Length: 322
Ligand SMILES: NC(=O)c1ccc[n+]([C@@H]2O[C@H](COP(=O)([O-])OP(=O)(O)OC[C@H]3O[C@@H](n4cnc5c(N)ncnc54)[C@H](OP(=O)(O)O)[C@@H]3O)[C@@H](O)[C@H]2O)c1
Image (tube, rainbow, N blue to C red):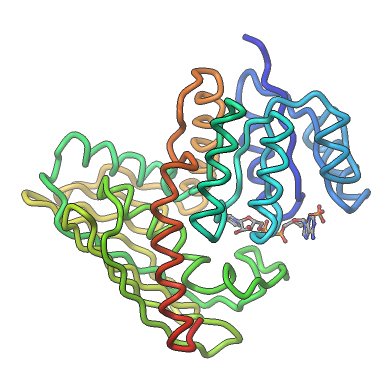
């Protein structure tokens, strides 16, 4: 098997998860990493056995023989950096959100098609064992046709501090509850519904510097109702997804449990679910490259999520709650 030479840019919190996941995959060589911090480059090269450390993205793209790159930089850099990698002929896995504007997603998809390269978004929730299995169950018809999906992700979170307690850059759009949690959950809901949004209604509130509480209602083209509710102000973490079907019900709690028609099918600790999601996502990216096929969460597939989020964001902006 010809190894896939992989480069990772932006060595912050999520990059460590990608490094561990890709490092475990057969047939992948961690060929390069790029960071603006030479000490971080040196540590990552040493800890993960990476072939080459680069001082920046340009150097990584031009001076190392790479097949694929993973983009782990702040959200506003995703689209331009993905475009640069595609133009350089690399397959690209981009952290979420792929882009904020559906037209930007279209331009990236066009570029990927022209270059004959894979473009995939790291919609990690989809790849957790619970959501992957729930999707398979919907495909098998375990609960009949999907009628309704109810999602809540409520927790205490300070804007500008990530899930590992690290200060991160704040972007007026993607640091909101809508994009931060909603990007994952609305995406998972539309995927589980096997559909895209026809109508989107959003209301929000702002106690921190940006919108930190939001409720989004979606009616899909086939008539599935989705409600996706998020808050950064809940003293207790609640993260769940209920899928109501014509003949049954599934419930996912966090990245921990999946219950199908009252029977627990998966039960793991949160961290195992998250790490499993990042691993499955990496495996899907590599498999899609090897098989020359669109991956789950391809640019084309996640366009529907990005369009729904953009519509919701515009409505919040009109309310002054963005
Ligand atoms: N899929 C998921 O479940 C998930 C989970 C968490 C985060 N994310 C996404 O991952 C991305 C990164 O989040 P994070 O929490 O890992 O943030 P982070 O710890 O701040 O890491 C981002 C890294 O990007 C690099 N960077 C920052 N500003 C830059 C600039 N102007 N130019 C070039 N590089 C720059 C920095 O790396 P260097 O200092 O090494 O250059 C920084 O460490 C975000 O877009 C977030 O939405 C996704």
